[in-house]
Length: 124
Image (tube, rainbow, N blue to C red; front, side, top):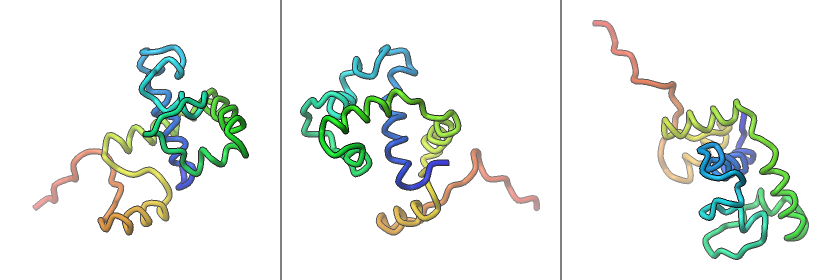
């Protein structure tokens, strides 16, 4: 299961690989609208934010790029893909309870992950 710090890179990888899963491209570098070009090839884009998990991949830009290419080439386990998809479909967060609590506190809203579908009606 994805925990707090592991959620962001797994989610980014899921997004980077979406065009491949949709058969739009044969390689992530061929999809021009992703951050792959910046993170793997060093292209410059003011919009791309190099988060802590990306920066921790290496001591310098070249090492991070090499590690990111390898990271993207490794696949996300099917269980994590399902977890991310299910959370997206329900509009929920994926991560540890501590992660959800921290997000809840920062946003000032109650966050709870419920099962799929409508709640059952109470029998009267």
